Image (tube, rainbow, N blue to C red; front, top):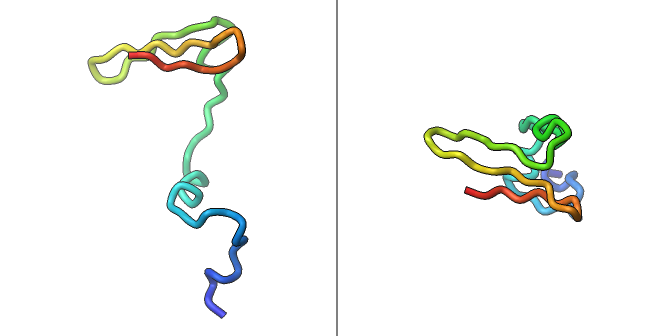
Length: 61
């Protein structure tokens, strides 16, 4: 039986599932450090990461 047949068939078999294992997880509390928003520099652009009252994150350019 091929190895692929042993995978859990309830999970989609795509590259994002496999790639997630290699990605680093950063807690939003680390980024915000108690504030409700933070500016993030990416190359020559500034982005605003904001925590809403309902607890969602919004990233704006």
